[in-house]
Amino acid sequence: MRRAALNLRLLLALVATAGLVTLASACGSSKSNANNPTNALAHSAYKAEAVLKPPTLAPPLALRNYLGKSVNLDSYRGKAALVTFIYTHCPDVCPLITSNLRVAQNLMGPKIAAKVQIIAVSVDARGDTRKTVARFLAAHEMTGRMQYLVGSTRELARVWKAWGVGSERDAKHPEFVEHSGLVFGVSASGKRTTLYSAGFKPADIAHDVALLANG
Image (cartoon, rainbow, N blue to C red; front, side):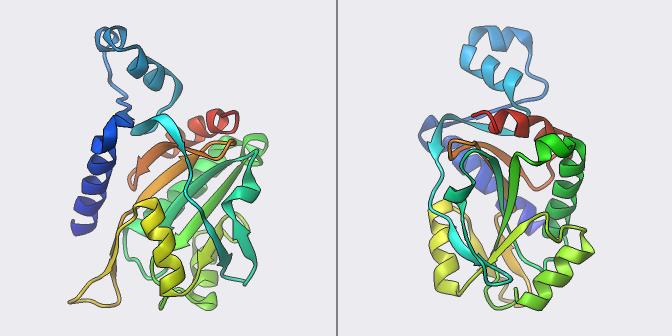
């Protein structure tokens, strides 16, 4: 419940920030859409829970993956990217996000899936080792389908701060990390465009990726 509350608080904070985010409601009435052309566009185009209006350039993201290879978000320009923040010992939210991303990827079909890169950034510098990440990816059938980025606490903290992501070790249960379980949709032009909470519907992301890949 604490993780869910943290995710909700961050989502609401992003929605409130400078009016840049428009909530995309699946049940928006035609009347409200007619009164707000911007919302109508967001509702008709994307199925994300939130859409940034206007999209903003994605913060820097350059780390090594769990195999030691350098990965830079900028290198995926021309593709959509789905960026999330997880850790391998997470008992609930992270497995849910990862499994749902796999389902979304399967729903896209091979042609659309080839236009998106899924990137997971560790929120646990100590616990996310090469072995634990390899086991986690294998368990969720995401080996070779997701870039899992790791680093020192200092390296990761810079990324967390740039992306507005919270990460705090649980004082009573130090093996657990309280973190922001969100997925960011980044367009092919490198702009953060959509936002999904941990309980997103895979079909929504599968739908939005085609739009992000052309954005």
